[in-house]
Image: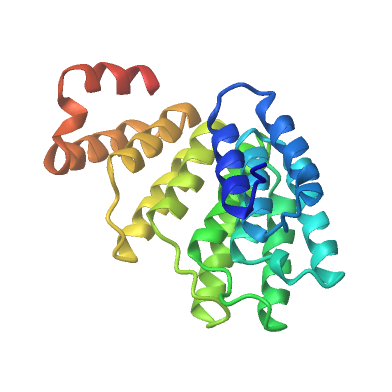
Length: 257
């Protein structure tokens, strides 16, 4: 009688979780709970696979459940299930998708503590801090734009003081710009123009998405300086990115504005 081993369990979990059927995650969990009976040891990769599936389905509470079960099993002496960097990044991804900047920030704090204790090989970097900015954006709160900008300022401070290697990149700025574009705040247009200038001064090249979000923020804010700013931005786009003026892209982007 053939019995499953670690390789076959990994393959079965991966195969189940490729399905779009929402019940497959529960079936994968059922399989995972039974593998001890087949003499198969759990490992951190199995846990991370389950956690990733729940994260992508926006169920961060299930991600936390399996993370803490993994942590408890490791603390009980099972070295194969040691939570690693991928485990924490999966948790961060889950809370970012769920729009919870508080929980995303808490995961980063835990990552810092684990790094300082020698349990993680890397400190949080730009990629991880960007996840917090995206959580602010997805939170859909009235102050989500201000929260995202505050997170950006914290990244800049951390990097300049040498606490973390987290220089903001284009994704960082674009997340904040999207938050201001969605906010419809009276100051959103001015904030967007200021952020655009700031990223240029940091030698970060704005892309097509950047300009679209800045223009959206300007129009929705109703700022009286809007026409002047739009003419400036359209001139820059015409010079640097012809896609805005081409066929369907033009119609699509003006509908967006």
